[in-house]
Image (tube, rainbow over all chains, first blue to last red; front, side, top):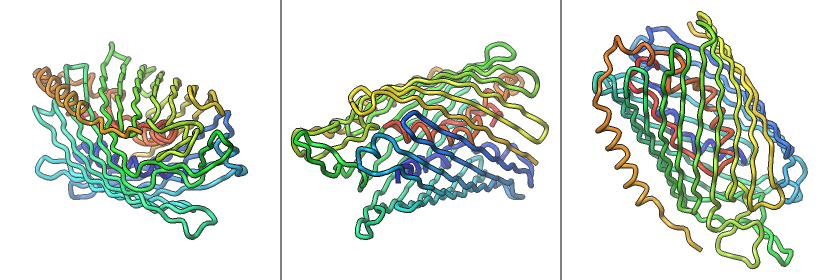
Length: 355
Length: 78
């Protein structure tokens, strides 16, 4: 279940992703994309993610696509050890489909995603609409997504919880000049139900342990500003900043800067750096002096920062695109004594075939 | 124990920022001026598969989410 929350959160993406490809393609054109990523850290966690996606432009102004994603996770992190559980492994399979249509100069998107593993099942739908304005200098998009989740616990047939997530996103992209594009995106999300982990326990100073208890509702807001600018004939800078707050008291700041250099007609080199800082949830404590209404020892709700960067090399052929990359990050947990820091590496690559 | 609703001031600030951006973006770039905007590295959607996997890693290991939309921009580069 550790990966399922991601599926609950990202259902908005199909609704607000790029839809202009409906106009850019002829009937019968499509692509097949395959990506693999390996995450490994010094907290004994490894995740291999494989993604296969394909899309096709129909004779009507509609593009349909489908994807399959598989996560293979293996972990013996300090969370697991503290819960007196041996190393665990699990697989998550996500299947999704989406249709994008161009009708009356509106871009319309309808998507569905299903995800499952041994103790979690989710289904999500996403709707989106977009419109280009001002001689295609402005694009406005809006999206809505809903995900319903059913949560279980391994070797406990009685345990069954639900989590429902509603999300909406509004985005505005604006051409600022011949070399500059700016955008703003705002996301709001409301989730109700079971947010905690059935496997994580909180400790009290007296030596006791009990299940963590999260509030049943959570409202989250995020806004991202982004600037893309061409610097000279071969270099592009991509800078973004995200501010985030939620009703649990978590607030965060994320900044990212990427430079892409064209090394020829078909070869790009990208260098990027990313920084993240987060304040803890109001109720987070690594251990509690006495039982409280809400309790969590989830280090992702603690105060921490991370910083990292990496390289990507991409080759663009006539019908084939190939990309390889490596990113490294350091996480520093400021009030989670069992793990002060963590070093992680993400490496992977992908190949895309267009016809 | 405080589980506060912090959305009010946030929404106000968002509306102000959106209004300023709209008001300042009056210049219209003609199609023949879009050579730079049409570069593959200026595509805000970028590599969709890579973005999906990046988001996968970040949202699992951080307590935040969202704000990932806003492709387009009418640059003809999607």
